[in-house]
Image 1: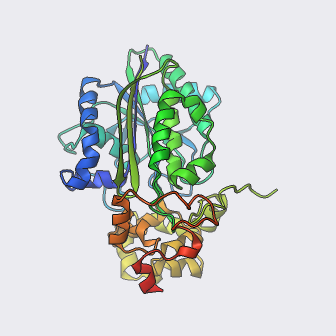
Image 2: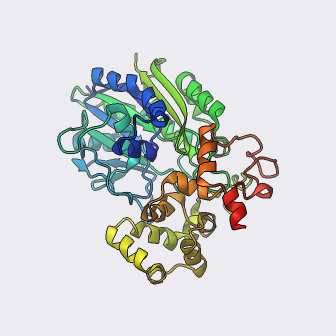
Image 3: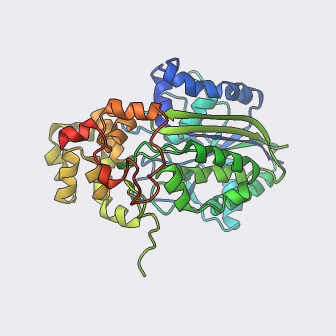
Length: 284
Length: 146
């Protein structure tokens, strides 16, 4: 039987990927960000899963305004790296896990979540930056990511995005789906995006560190209550793009009901326009 | 019944909802076309001619040509789509975001290093924070332009 062993939460700021790709990661500005992931890289080497279920959002790369799926699960065998306009990131290709992904789609749809099934999809920085933060710099040709990845894209670009409550319940359904898969796989669920940031208008550059840290506290200790928070509070308090944090509730919802073991917590301002938050929670 | 828009009282913020998306459909789809290198070249060679291939409003075309991202947002643009114009110009997200505040690149970067823009006074329209309409533009770039 497959099981979820741990969940990882992290921001997915594109400039972090660019800093790594351009070899700027040892500059003092970026060391303050990458330093927070030193423990995490070691932890992932010691706790390598068989599959990563990676919740992220596409940033107008795979999905234009022609189609805007609220929840899209990648069931392909491989996912090309998107050219977001600056050229594709020089990272290894993303290998999928079509069997588990299809199983999850079948189970979760029958649990009343209307997923869009995607068999061809480029993946952007939302997916590759978390992998880079957790694995370090890899050679695009010689190296590989540590395991297959199932991309799970959530619409947080066009309002309204799914509610925190729905994301939490979806996490529950994903947990049930994983647990009903016959092969003995260790699965990690990663929730990405956030924390507070706003990329537009005269309020661009908004950061709310106090609110972010309260979010981390509550995500650990009282996630179900946190999931009741309405959209407007994310937008008002954490910025228009801070709404990405609803995706963390999918990963948290996939964890066991018993309190998790907090293996790592990190928070830093800024990476470009954004507050960087990071947690590793293990099922006990 | 009209759509409920509880977010209109947040200062300095445009929420990309269904109405904005409908208004900005061709503007944003034009931006998507810049993901192809060949299209970026054609756009750079003659912006006006390239824009005229799209059923965009004149206001949208002018907003793009003047690289006024606030104006693009008002015309239905979304920042992740508009970022393709920035990529074509070789600009980062930080440069693009900063350009909407009236600050110079250095002023905006320094604000971020100091911990970012404070939430105080910037939660509701009518407060006195630096993102409020009566305090624009915020930096020397905007004052020069004004």
